Length: 197
Image: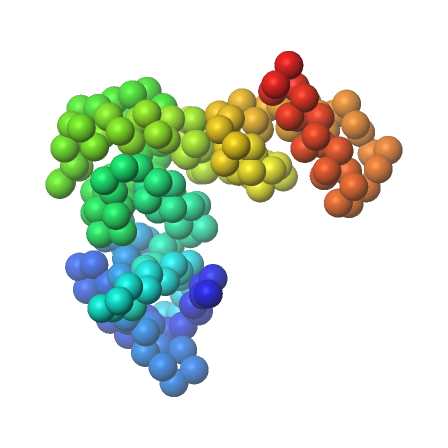
């Protein structure tokens, strides 16, 4: 419903910020790490958002970047991790550390995050290894033109890092013989052939 909000920071709380835009002051729940990445109170900024609509409440969650929001969405797919738990996890570990811990299977590092137990840490590794490779040192692929296609392949169950590599290989083979959406579709189809063959 809302992709992002751009406005003036009126207040910073431990787990939320108030953003003023168009005469409306929004309360946006954010991980403490993301709040720390925002400019000072009084400055303007953009916050990427996700709206949680329940029977008893409507809560707006915010993130300092699109990759942080994508990570939040991935965390919600882990059994036993809801929005509040996902926010605590993101507030207790940096993006790079989280990616590194998931990729290396470092249960101890994940357990060090406040409120995160061993079982949930193990579930996170099983569910998310290879799927969160946005901007950390491990991935080195945050600027890839194939991120969206890799996300689609990741949703199909393929490892995202492998998908990015295969998409680049497919693009090199196809070259510039076709353009636009047709080229993207051809790259995607060829990548699936590589991954399944």
